[in-house]
Amino acid sequence: MMALLSGAFAQDNSASYVSAYGSVSTRNGKPSKIQYGTASYYHDKFEGRKTANGEIFTQKGMTCAHNTLPLGTWVRVTNLSNKKTVVVRVTDRLHHKNPRLVDLSKAAAKKLAYTGKGLTKVKVEVLGKNPPETVAIK
Image 1: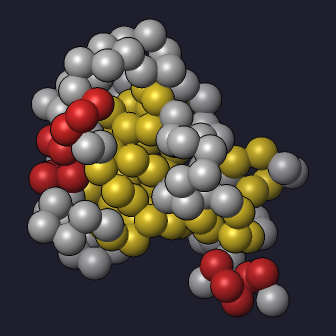
Image 2: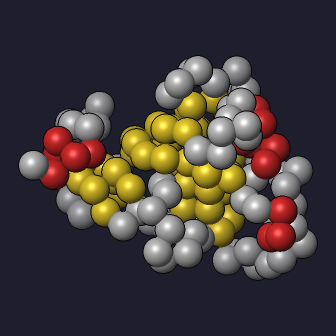
Image 3: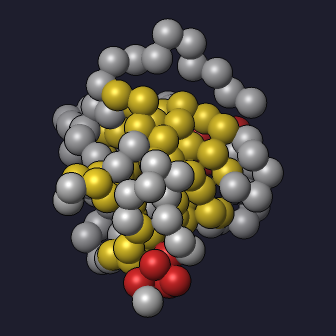
């Protein structure tokens, strides 16, 4: 039943379930390398505030908030409605009651072309702790 609610299984054959943070794929109880869920973007009121990793947030940065991935993790976010992608770094956490998988900076949301809608379904792929050699944006 839970798999039906979340939309089936992740591509890496790990189980997918619905949590307080949206559809989250896990492998052995840890976040998997591919997750599916809903993305939102930061409200302007957060501009200039300190993030969970101690950095000052800016809407112009290519960053995101995520509740289960380690801070400093690089991820590729794909807008499932138009296949546009962006690479961002996890610098913050969402509010524990927020049902979204990821909250992006406005610059990242614009690259994914969903600022007019506010929300979009996404695929989040974990790239690791080291910055990608090329940060390609489609």
